[in-house]
Image (cartoon, rainbow, N blue to C red):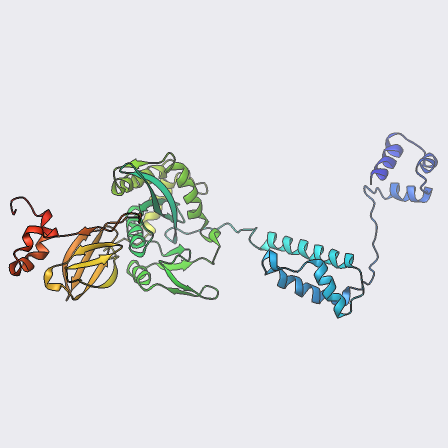
Length: 410
Protein backbone atom coordinates (compact mmCIF):
# COMPACT_ATOMS: atom_id res chain seq x y z
CA UNK A 1 0.00 0.00 0.00
CA UNK A 2 2.94 2.38 0.69
CA UNK A 3 4.40 1.67 -2.76
CA UNK A 4 1.04 2.36 -4.42
CA UNK A 5 0.84 5.70 -2.62
CA UNK A 6 4.33 6.61 -3.88
CA UNK A 7 3.39 5.67 -7.46
CA UNK A 8 0.31 7.90 -7.33
CA UNK A 9 2.28 10.85 -5.98
CA UNK A 10 5.02 10.44 -8.62
CA UNK A 11 2.53 10.34 -11.49
CA UNK A 12 -0.18 12.83 -10.48
CA UNK A 13 1.80 15.33 -8.42
CA UNK A 14 5.34 15.20 -9.83
CA UNK A 15 4.36 14.22 -13.42
CA UNK A 16 6.90 11.37 -13.52
CA UNK A 17 6.52 9.27 -16.74
CA UNK A 18 5.32 5.71 -16.48
CA UNK A 19 8.57 4.45 -18.03
CA UNK A 20 10.55 6.10 -15.20
CA UNK A 21 8.16 4.66 -12.58
CA UNK A 22 8.72 1.24 -14.17
CA UNK A 23 12.47 1.68 -13.83
CA UNK A 24 12.23 2.80 -10.21
CA UNK A 25 9.80 0.15 -8.99
CA UNK A 26 10.44 -2.85 -11.20
CA UNK A 27 6.69 -3.17 -11.87
CA UNK A 28 5.41 -3.68 -15.40
CA UNK A 29 3.93 -0.71 -17.24
CA UNK A 30 0.62 -2.56 -17.61
CA UNK A 31 0.36 -3.03 -13.84
CA UNK A 32 1.16 0.65 -13.22
CA UNK A 33 -1.42 1.78 -15.81
CA UNK A 34 -4.05 -0.53 -14.33
CA UNK A 35 -3.64 1.01 -10.88
CA UNK A 36 -3.65 4.58 -12.18
CA UNK A 37 -6.67 4.14 -14.51
CA UNK A 38 -8.76 2.37 -11.87
CA UNK A 39 -7.97 5.19 -9.40
CA UNK A 40 -7.11 2.48 -6.85
CA UNK A 41 -6.19 3.84 -3.43
CA UNK A 42 -5.11 0.52 -1.89
CA UNK A 43 -4.28 -2.78 -3.57
CA UNK A 44 -6.76 -5.60 -3.29
CA UNK A 45 -5.69 -9.19 -3.68
CA UNK A 46 -8.11 -12.01 -4.17
CA UNK A 47 -7.24 -15.01 -2.05
CA UNK A 48 -8.47 -18.16 -3.78
CA UNK A 49 -10.51 -20.52 -1.67
CA UNK A 50 -8.50 -23.66 -1.08
CA UNK A 51 -9.82 -26.78 0.65
CA UNK A 52 -8.30 -27.41 4.06
CA UNK A 53 -7.58 -30.70 5.77
CA UNK A 54 -9.41 -29.27 8.78
CA UNK A 55 -12.73 -28.79 6.94
CA UNK A 56 -14.12 -32.29 7.75
CA UNK A 57 -13.37 -31.65 11.43
CA UNK A 58 -14.52 -28.00 11.66
CA UNK A 59 -17.94 -28.80 13.15
CA UNK A 60 -16.40 -31.16 15.70
CA UNK A 61 -13.81 -28.55 16.72
CA UNK A 62 -16.46 -25.82 17.01
CA UNK A 63 -18.48 -28.03 19.35
CA UNK A 64 -15.42 -28.65 21.49
CA UNK A 65 -14.74 -24.91 21.70
CA UNK A 66 -18.32 -24.19 22.82
CA UNK A 67 -18.02 -26.79 25.58
CA UNK A 68 -14.61 -25.49 26.70
CA UNK A 69 -15.93 -21.90 26.83
CA UNK A 70 -18.38 -22.95 29.54
CA UNK A 71 -15.63 -24.35 31.78
CA UNK A 72 -13.41 -22.48 34.22
CA UNK A 73 -10.13 -21.20 32.84
CA UNK A 74 -8.01 -23.85 34.60
CA UNK A 75 -10.16 -26.73 33.29
CA UNK A 76 -10.16 -25.77 29.60
CA UNK A 77 -8.20 -27.77 27.02
CA UNK A 78 -5.55 -25.89 25.10
CA UNK A 79 -5.39 -25.71 21.31
CA UNK A 80 -2.50 -28.20 21.37
CA UNK A 81 -4.58 -30.71 23.34
CA UNK A 82 -7.47 -30.36 20.89
CA UNK A 83 -5.05 -30.80 17.98
CA UNK A 84 -3.84 -34.04 19.56
CA UNK A 85 -7.44 -35.22 19.99
CA UNK A 86 -8.17 -34.44 16.32
CA UNK A 87 -5.12 -36.46 15.26
CA UNK A 88 -6.59 -39.44 17.12
CA UNK A 89 -9.76 -38.99 15.03
CA UNK A 90 -7.75 -39.05 11.79
CA UNK A 91 -6.73 -35.42 11.18
CA UNK A 92 -3.29 -35.27 9.54
CA UNK A 93 -2.94 -31.52 9.17
CA UNK A 94 -0.71 -29.09 11.03
CA UNK A 95 -1.20 -27.60 14.48
CA UNK A 96 -0.95 -24.10 12.97
CA UNK A 97 -4.20 -24.64 11.04
CA UNK A 98 -5.98 -25.69 14.26
CA UNK A 99 -4.57 -22.70 16.17
CA UNK A 100 -5.74 -20.31 13.41
CA UNK A 101 -9.23 -21.85 13.49
CA UNK A 102 -9.36 -21.41 17.32
CA UNK A 103 -8.27 -17.76 17.07
CA UNK A 104 -10.91 -17.02 14.42
CA UNK A 105 -13.63 -18.80 16.44
CA UNK A 106 -12.79 -16.84 19.62
CA UNK A 107 -12.72 -13.52 17.74
CA UNK A 108 -16.14 -14.22 16.19
CA UNK A 109 -17.55 -15.20 19.61
CA UNK A 110 -16.19 -12.04 21.23
CA UNK A 111 -17.71 -9.89 18.48
CA UNK A 112 -21.06 -11.62 18.95
CA UNK A 113 -21.02 -11.01 22.70
CA UNK A 114 -20.16 -7.35 22.24
CA UNK A 115 -22.98 -6.76 19.78
CA UNK A 116 -25.74 -8.94 21.23
CA UNK A 117 -24.53 -10.03 24.66
CA UNK A 118 -23.57 -8.35 27.90
CA UNK A 119 -21.54 -5.61 26.26
CA UNK A 120 -24.57 -4.02 24.60
CA UNK A 121 -27.68 -2.53 26.22
CA UNK A 122 -31.01 -1.12 25.10
CA UNK A 123 -32.18 2.20 26.61
CA UNK A 124 -35.34 1.64 28.68
CA UNK A 125 -38.34 3.97 28.92
CA UNK A 126 -40.93 3.71 31.72
CA UNK A 127 -44.41 5.21 31.82
CA UNK A 128 -45.47 7.31 34.86
CA UNK A 129 -46.33 5.05 37.78
CA UNK A 130 -45.21 1.92 35.92
CA UNK A 131 -42.33 0.62 38.04
CA UNK A 132 -39.86 1.12 40.86
CA UNK A 133 -36.46 -0.49 41.44
CA UNK A 134 -35.05 -1.68 44.78
CA UNK A 135 -31.59 -2.64 45.99
CA UNK A 136 -29.47 -2.96 49.15
CA UNK A 137 -26.00 -1.58 49.81
CA UNK A 138 -23.53 -1.53 52.69
CA UNK A 139 -22.34 1.83 54.03
CA UNK A 140 -20.93 3.27 57.25
CA UNK A 141 -21.95 6.01 59.69
CA UNK A 142 -21.03 7.20 63.17
CA UNK A 143 -23.91 6.34 65.52
CA UNK A 144 -23.45 7.49 69.09
CA UNK A 145 -19.76 8.06 68.39
CA UNK A 146 -19.21 4.47 67.18
CA UNK A 147 -18.46 3.57 63.56
CA UNK A 148 -21.30 1.29 62.46
CA UNK A 149 -21.83 -0.77 59.32
CA UNK A 150 -25.32 -0.23 57.91
CA UNK A 151 -27.57 -2.06 55.48
CA UNK A 152 -29.02 0.68 53.28
CA UNK A 153 -32.26 0.27 51.31
CA UNK A 154 -32.51 2.19 48.01
CA UNK A 155 -35.88 2.63 46.26
CA UNK A 156 -36.20 4.56 42.99
CA UNK A 157 -39.14 5.37 40.72
CA UNK A 158 -38.22 4.33 37.17
CA UNK A 159 -40.05 7.20 35.43
CA UNK A 160 -39.33 10.30 37.51
CA UNK A 161 -36.14 8.86 39.09
CA UNK A 162 -37.21 10.09 42.52
CA UNK A 163 -35.36 8.04 45.14
CA UNK A 164 -35.30 7.30 48.85
CA UNK A 165 -32.52 5.97 51.05
CA UNK A 166 -33.09 4.38 54.47
CA UNK A 167 -30.57 2.73 56.81
CA UNK A 168 -30.94 -0.42 58.93
CA UNK A 169 -28.65 -2.55 61.05
CA UNK A 170 -29.72 -5.81 59.39
CA UNK A 171 -30.91 -6.95 55.96
CA UNK A 172 -33.84 -9.13 57.02
CA UNK A 173 -37.50 -9.58 56.05
CA UNK A 174 -38.89 -7.12 58.57
CA UNK A 175 -36.33 -4.49 57.50
CA UNK A 176 -37.30 -4.96 53.84
CA UNK A 177 -41.01 -4.59 54.61
CA UNK A 178 -40.40 -1.42 56.60
CA UNK A 179 -38.07 -0.01 53.92
CA UNK A 180 -40.72 -0.40 51.20
CA UNK A 181 -43.48 0.98 53.43
CA UNK A 182 -41.42 4.07 54.23
CA UNK A 183 -40.38 4.45 50.57
CA UNK A 184 -43.99 4.39 49.33
CA UNK A 185 -44.86 7.00 51.96
CA UNK A 186 -42.06 9.33 50.82
CA UNK A 187 -42.60 8.75 47.09
CA UNK A 188 -46.32 9.42 47.37
CA UNK A 189 -47.79 6.06 46.38
CA UNK A 190 -47.21 2.59 44.95
CA UNK A 191 -46.25 1.88 41.29
CA UNK A 192 -47.68 -1.04 39.31
CA UNK A 193 -44.62 -3.30 39.59
CA UNK A 194 -41.34 -3.57 41.46
CA UNK A 195 -37.99 -4.71 40.05
CA UNK A 196 -35.73 -6.63 42.47
CA UNK A 197 -32.67 -8.82 42.35
CA UNK A 198 -32.88 -12.37 43.72
CA UNK A 199 -32.35 -11.41 47.37
CA UNK A 200 -32.97 -14.11 49.96
CA UNK A 201 -35.61 -12.01 51.71
CA UNK A 202 -37.77 -12.23 48.58
CA UNK A 203 -36.81 -15.39 46.66
CA UNK A 204 -36.58 -18.81 48.32
CA UNK A 205 -35.49 -20.62 45.15
CA UNK A 206 -34.44 -19.59 41.63
CA UNK A 207 -35.90 -21.73 38.86
CA UNK A 208 -35.18 -21.86 35.14
CA UNK A 209 -35.69 -18.67 33.17
CA UNK A 210 -37.92 -16.26 35.09
CA UNK A 211 -39.40 -18.92 37.38
CA UNK A 212 -39.04 -17.99 41.07
CA UNK A 213 -40.28 -19.52 44.31
CA UNK A 214 -41.21 -16.31 46.12
CA UNK A 215 -41.06 -16.07 49.89
CA UNK A 216 -44.54 -16.31 51.42
CA UNK A 217 -44.24 -13.16 53.55
CA UNK A 218 -42.82 -11.18 50.65
CA UNK A 219 -45.70 -12.35 48.45
CA UNK A 220 -48.14 -11.26 51.16
CA UNK A 221 -46.56 -7.81 51.27
CA UNK A 222 -46.69 -7.47 47.45
CA UNK A 223 -50.34 -8.56 47.51
CA UNK A 224 -51.13 -6.02 50.23
CA UNK A 225 -49.63 -3.12 48.26
CA UNK A 226 -50.95 -4.49 44.93
CA UNK A 227 -47.71 -4.32 42.95
CA UNK A 228 -46.31 -7.05 40.72
CA UNK A 229 -42.81 -8.22 41.77
CA UNK A 230 -40.34 -8.81 38.95
CA UNK A 231 -36.93 -10.39 39.50
CA UNK A 232 -33.77 -9.88 37.44
CA UNK A 233 -31.79 -12.69 35.90
CA UNK A 234 -28.94 -13.86 38.17
CA UNK A 235 -25.84 -11.63 38.00
CA UNK A 236 -27.67 -9.14 35.74
CA UNK A 237 -27.59 -5.92 37.71
CA UNK A 238 -28.07 -3.81 34.58
CA UNK A 239 -31.73 -4.91 34.49
CA UNK A 240 -32.25 -2.47 37.37
CA UNK A 241 -29.50 -0.09 36.35
CA UNK A 242 -31.19 3.05 37.67
CA UNK A 243 -31.09 1.98 41.30
CA UNK A 244 -27.62 0.44 40.83
CA UNK A 245 -26.41 3.88 39.76
CA UNK A 246 -28.28 5.44 42.66
CA UNK A 247 -26.21 3.29 45.06
CA UNK A 248 -23.01 4.78 43.62
CA UNK A 249 -24.38 8.33 43.58
CA UNK A 250 -25.59 8.06 47.18
CA UNK A 251 -22.09 7.11 48.38
CA UNK A 252 -20.80 10.36 46.95
CA UNK A 253 -23.73 12.58 47.95
CA UNK A 254 -24.71 11.16 51.35
CA UNK A 255 -21.99 8.99 52.85
CA UNK A 256 -18.91 11.12 52.16
CA UNK A 257 -17.89 12.47 54.58
CA UNK A 258 -19.21 9.84 57.00
CA UNK A 259 -22.41 11.19 58.65
CA UNK A 260 -22.56 11.31 62.46
CA UNK A 261 -25.78 11.07 64.48
CA UNK A 262 -26.78 9.98 68.00
CA UNK A 263 -28.84 7.03 66.71
CA UNK A 264 -30.20 5.42 63.56
CA UNK A 265 -33.58 7.15 63.82
CA UNK A 266 -31.95 10.58 63.63
CA UNK A 267 -29.85 9.37 60.69
CA UNK A 268 -32.95 8.22 58.77
CA UNK A 269 -34.70 11.55 59.34
CA UNK A 270 -31.66 13.31 57.85
CA UNK A 271 -31.46 10.86 54.92
CA UNK A 272 -35.11 11.45 54.04
CA UNK A 273 -34.66 15.23 54.13
CA UNK A 274 -31.52 15.03 51.99
CA UNK A 275 -33.18 12.83 49.35
CA UNK A 276 -36.16 15.14 48.96
CA UNK A 277 -33.87 18.19 48.78
CA UNK A 278 -31.75 16.56 46.07
CA UNK A 279 -34.81 15.89 43.90
CA UNK A 280 -34.99 19.63 43.30
CA UNK A 281 -31.27 19.95 42.56
CA UNK A 282 -30.75 17.10 40.06
CA UNK A 283 -31.86 17.50 36.45
CA UNK A 284 -33.91 14.58 35.16
CA UNK A 285 -31.68 14.20 32.10
CA UNK A 286 -34.30 12.83 29.71
CA UNK A 287 -37.40 14.91 30.47
CA UNK A 288 -37.34 18.69 30.97
CA UNK A 289 -36.93 19.96 34.50
CA UNK A 290 -35.62 18.45 37.71
CA UNK A 291 -36.50 15.12 39.30
CA UNK A 292 -38.88 17.00 41.61
CA UNK A 293 -40.73 18.50 38.61
CA UNK A 294 -41.23 15.12 36.93
CA UNK A 295 -42.12 13.44 40.23
CA UNK A 296 -44.84 16.00 40.92
CA UNK A 297 -46.52 14.90 37.66
CA UNK A 298 -45.98 11.18 38.31
CA UNK A 299 -47.65 11.15 41.74
CA UNK A 300 -51.09 11.19 40.09
CA UNK A 301 -50.24 7.85 38.41
CA UNK A 302 -49.29 6.13 41.69
CA UNK A 303 -51.77 4.14 43.78
CA UNK A 304 -52.35 5.74 47.22
CA UNK A 305 -50.51 3.94 50.01
CA UNK A 306 -53.52 3.16 52.22
CA UNK A 307 -53.08 1.07 55.36
CA UNK A 308 -49.41 0.11 55.95
CA UNK A 309 -48.51 -3.57 55.77
CA UNK A 310 -48.04 -5.19 59.18
CA UNK A 311 -44.53 -6.27 58.29
CA UNK A 312 -43.52 -8.58 61.11
CA UNK A 313 -41.78 -11.94 60.93
CA UNK A 314 -43.29 -14.56 63.23
CA UNK A 315 -41.43 -17.18 65.26
CA UNK A 316 -42.83 -19.78 67.63
CA UNK A 317 -40.98 -19.75 70.95
CA UNK A 318 -41.30 -21.67 74.18
CA UNK A 319 -41.14 -19.57 77.36
CA UNK A 320 -38.50 -20.77 79.83
CA UNK A 321 -39.26 -21.54 83.50
CA UNK A 322 -37.71 -18.15 84.31
CA UNK A 323 -40.36 -16.46 82.11
CA UNK A 324 -37.95 -15.59 79.27
CA UNK A 325 -37.86 -16.06 75.49
CA UNK A 326 -34.60 -15.93 73.51
CA UNK A 327 -34.03 -14.08 70.27
CA UNK A 328 -30.75 -13.04 68.61
CA UNK A 329 -28.65 -13.94 71.68
CA UNK A 330 -30.81 -11.76 73.93
CA UNK A 331 -33.61 -12.76 76.33
CA UNK A 332 -36.89 -10.95 76.98
CA UNK A 333 -39.37 -11.44 79.81
CA UNK A 334 -42.94 -12.69 79.38
CA UNK A 335 -45.83 -12.64 81.93
CA UNK A 336 -45.35 -15.49 84.40
CA UNK A 337 -48.71 -17.09 83.56
CA UNK A 338 -47.21 -18.19 80.23
CA UNK A 339 -44.05 -19.81 81.61
CA UNK A 340 -43.27 -23.20 79.99
CA UNK A 341 -45.81 -22.52 77.24
CA UNK A 342 -45.48 -21.77 73.52
CA UNK A 343 -45.96 -18.16 72.38
CA UNK A 344 -45.75 -16.25 69.10
CA UNK A 345 -42.83 -13.84 68.77
CA UNK A 346 -43.51 -11.13 66.17
CA UNK A 347 -40.33 -9.40 65.06
CA UNK A 348 -40.43 -5.78 63.85
CA UNK A 349 -37.42 -3.63 62.92
CA UNK A 350 -37.50 -1.76 66.23
CA UNK A 351 -39.58 -3.90 68.63
CA UNK A 352 -40.63 -7.41 69.59
CA UNK A 353 -44.29 -8.25 70.22
CA UNK A 354 -45.17 -11.45 72.10
CA UNK A 355 -48.66 -12.85 71.58
CA UNK A 356 -50.60 -15.96 72.57
CA UNK A 357 -54.19 -17.15 72.45
CA UNK A 358 -55.15 -14.34 70.07
CA UNK A 359 -53.96 -11.49 72.31
CA UNK A 360 -50.79 -9.43 72.72
CA UNK A 361 -49.04 -10.30 75.96
CA UNK A 362 -46.23 -7.75 75.99
CA UNK A 363 -43.86 -5.69 73.90
CA UNK A 364 -40.12 -4.95 74.16
CA UNK A 365 -37.77 -2.63 72.34
CA UNK A 366 -35.56 -4.72 70.06
CA UNK A 367 -31.83 -4.87 70.79
CA UNK A 368 -29.56 -5.46 67.79
CA UNK A 369 -25.92 -6.17 68.57
CA UNK A 370 -23.68 -6.91 65.58
CA UNK A 371 -20.67 -7.73 67.76
CA UNK A 372 -20.48 -11.21 69.28
CA UNK A 373 -17.58 -10.47 71.64
CA UNK A 374 -20.01 -9.52 74.42
CA UNK A 375 -22.57 -11.82 76.10
CA UNK A 376 -26.25 -11.41 75.29
CA UNK A 377 -28.44 -9.14 77.37
CA UNK A 378 -31.59 -9.91 79.37
CA UNK A 379 -34.46 -7.46 79.32
CA UNK A 380 -36.90 -7.69 82.25
CA UNK A 381 -40.23 -6.15 83.02
CA UNK A 382 -40.66 -6.57 86.80
CA UNK A 383 -44.46 -6.57 86.45
CA UNK A 384 -44.23 -9.90 84.59
CA UNK A 385 -43.07 -11.57 87.84
CA UNK A 386 -45.72 -10.27 90.28
CA UNK A 387 -47.65 -13.54 90.13
CA UNK A 388 -44.48 -15.41 91.13
CA UNK A 389 -43.61 -13.31 94.19
CA UNK A 390 -47.12 -13.83 95.57
CA UNK A 391 -46.01 -17.42 96.14
CA UNK A 392 -42.28 -16.70 96.65
CA UNK A 393 -41.96 -13.30 98.36
CA UNK A 394 -38.33 -13.96 99.26
CA UNK A 395 -37.44 -13.50 95.60
CA UNK A 396 -37.93 -9.76 96.07
CA UNK A 397 -34.62 -9.56 97.90
CA UNK A 398 -32.32 -10.82 95.11
CA UNK A 399 -34.62 -11.22 92.12
CA UNK A 400 -32.92 -9.82 89.00
CA UNK A 401 -36.15 -8.36 87.54
CA UNK A 402 -36.74 -6.25 90.64
CA UNK A 403 -33.42 -4.45 90.39
CA UNK A 404 -35.17 -2.20 87.85
CA UNK A 405 -38.29 -1.66 89.96
CA UNK A 406 -39.18 2.03 90.51
CA UNK A 407 -37.89 3.48 93.77
CA UNK A 408 -41.38 4.13 95.14
CA UNK A 409 -42.14 0.39 95.00
CA UNK A 410 -38.83 -0.45 96.64
